[in-house]
Image 1 (cartoon, rainbow, N blue to C red):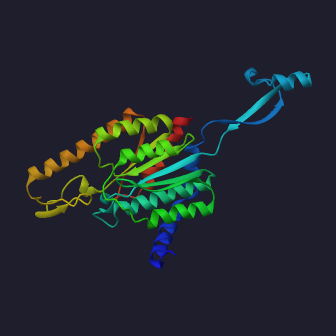
Image 2: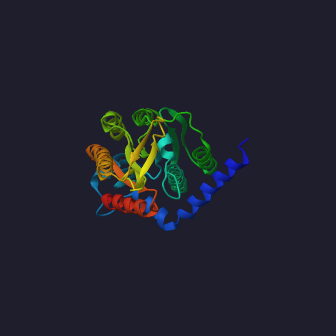
Image 3: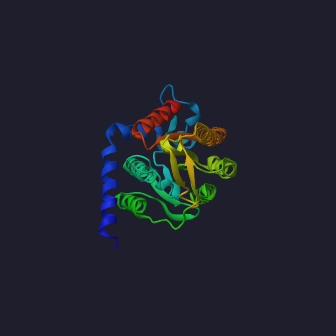
Length: 294
């Protein structure tokens, strides 16, 4: 039985996500993701202008005049949400931690997929696979996804993003869309192989989550910092311009390496920050993808 406090947390995430899933937002999702191919719909009589390559010669021979096959876009997709639960996601310098943003965003994406009759799967990971829910449909399955997103207490603290990507590549049988939601605070070199394999088999989308204090340090004097994944700590003099500059340079370099890697493998990126509402960048991404499909 789930404790009452956890049920309240699930409900809060669900309500917040539902408020985001407006008709306009759902329309953006629908126009962006149209399915993975074509499926047969019907046979009808040939009409001037029809492509002769679609003529069904068997039916035509029986009927004595031409008939063509009609195909429609296959609507149903398989969507997998690969969500990072590592220790670094607990960080947040403002009103919310990165992990809270990740949980709500993933819930919104699950709502959108189920609303559009897509199959949704969930992969929760740290330095190991914490949970995997195979793709499914329907409201009951949606609530299971939301519950796991809101209540999973990870066993690991570190991050093995490469292993998670390889797991998704193996476990998702049919071609699907995989949203990788993470802060991507990993070594880009170790990610190259797994990302290449995932992008070769699936439509991979990287949702990169950050916090302003991971980009630059504030000048607040001596600051005690600790790595939430390893537990290593240090005291940093943030009044020293050289320290702040080195921190910003290192953070920018790490981001650029990840961005170059994503571009190299044709993986779209949706950059999100705890300081900004995620609706605008997500809608921008939907519109960008929709234009590409026209």
